[in-house]
Image (cartoon, rainbow, N blue to C red; front, side):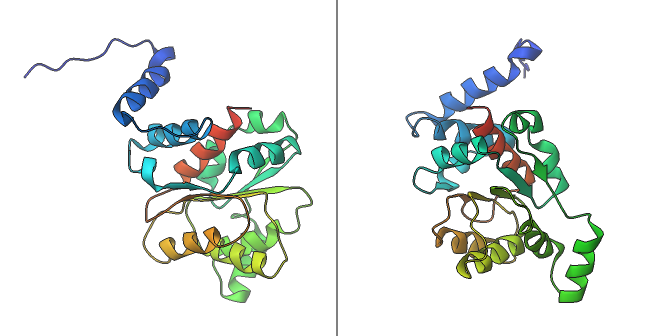
Length: 208
């Protein structure tokens, strides 16, 4: 069996990948702008299930861009997600990517309260005096805490990107966020990850 490789310049690899994704999606179409989010997630994961799994609240892309223009910060639940987000693109609008998982006070609060660090991170994020976007790719407990704080009227995120991966409480935590009135981008089901969270953030930023 002969193995054939495409001759693609390094600078053209991403473009060619997007062409392949578009071809394989066939007649599937998405609203303008949202198609770029779906395709970037598929590009990151090579998983076409995201064409069906990604759920968007009404006008969420426009609301996310407005928040970024107002200097919103992006809070992540992992260092991996933080490292994957294009910080220069966000900084153009006065925002930064924040992650509190390694902070000593977060570790102490989690131990004291018997919670995960991700839960304690959400509590610490409440002290940030800027518009907030949450990009959650790993910890369903972060989504549960966000839901509790939203229901109590203690926090009002500009956007929640809820794409944790796994098995324990992953599916219901995503469904809880979809019950709120907060703008969301959710990957329904068990699939997701920090790379997906970062890809969604970048797909938004690259359109601005």
